[in-house]
Image (cartoon, rainbow, N blue to C red):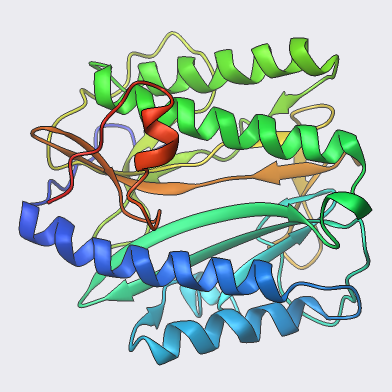
Length: 279
């Protein structure tokens, strides 16, 4: 937890720089999802992202970060986050989460997506429901940034959304608590923490100039996780499949702007009654 460490507030001009990084991340994630197919390895997906980032003249946030050896994290099935790309061969029906970060002119952006290899026809319907539940929860959290006073509003919105999805789907969903969202800017991970579950903490006051990564991680079972022998890959302790969605969001004087969404978050937020406020 970041505790009371100082929050970095951005000017509109700095947010515009982060938007450039965000669009690179969006392009890289789209390219990876479009390329993913049975028979490819997770290292192949990493190469796709690396090429997009390099072609844009950006730098990968993850490569070398605390020793991480790749451009993106690729987490498959029961892997929640921080999967190291390598020789694992993908199969139709695999649930894949890809987390990507990029730096432009010293400013970071970070996002993640989850999808099923082979598309809906190859997917277990329970995996599709999990992906939808996690994605919806992320957007509920983003929308809360537009109207909430403190970051507890984000945590409550994510938690409520996952609970509603579990009731709707007749499923058990576990919100991972060991890993949370975060501030982002001149470093990939900054204060404050952005929780995905209810606590008694009020959290930091939401103020213009904040840039935050909202990223729920949800399993089809228990919320408990552990780290594998590679010291990176985090898996669900009960072996249940997991999904991970993330966007980098700027809070501005007139509202929010999703820096890692191609449309700035306009479509999804409009459905939640929120208008974006681009620089």
